Length: 262
Image (cartoon, rainbow, N blue to C red):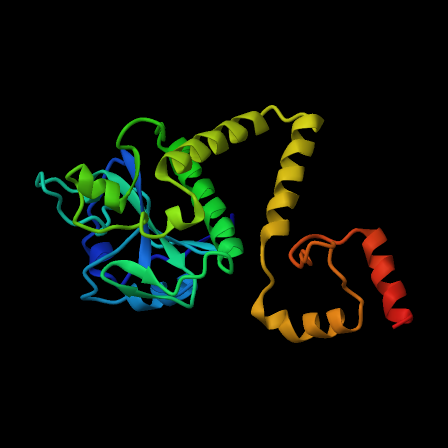
């Protein structure tokens, strides 16, 4: 996970500078089809925005926008009169392009096309939450520690929003799974402190498998189309070209051979 820091210093929340003792992490999604975290940093880094989170998570980058112990403006007030603003670190998951909203429901969202985006973003969200839980001594499996905005509403500590349950279940992901994956990521980090070659190989295999699921970037579209037309890149037989995977020397010489004979 690439973690950058761009504090929202012009936001009123940052200017007030209240602090909290983190007791949990609340997961949000932006509710708009915009995958670039930088866009939200620009939109929110000014006065009179009336909202502020600790980070934005994207497909390829995560931007921290508040110090973790600064009180954010992300949850509103729940039915109990309490607010997760006083207890929880917050982050927004940036949604991919191509859909709209009607009555709180995603319209025109293509689950299959967005699967690589979601998988990458989800892993970034897991890593960020695991890092925060480790840093502040939190157990993600304890009730009320790692929650989404919708769960915060059910618990009476957040306003009536449906995120992230309007989105994640489309990919078969529940918050219970997210909590388990976060706990597992924390265990993996603990094991890395006593790394063995066998464990390193296991982690590397998992990393390479995840990279194979990532879709290509738009900027490479013309080059990819040319390479496929020339037969230089032919995929692995199931329609996957694995453009974000690493290339072995064997694959490199094969592509050079195919280029020479194209």
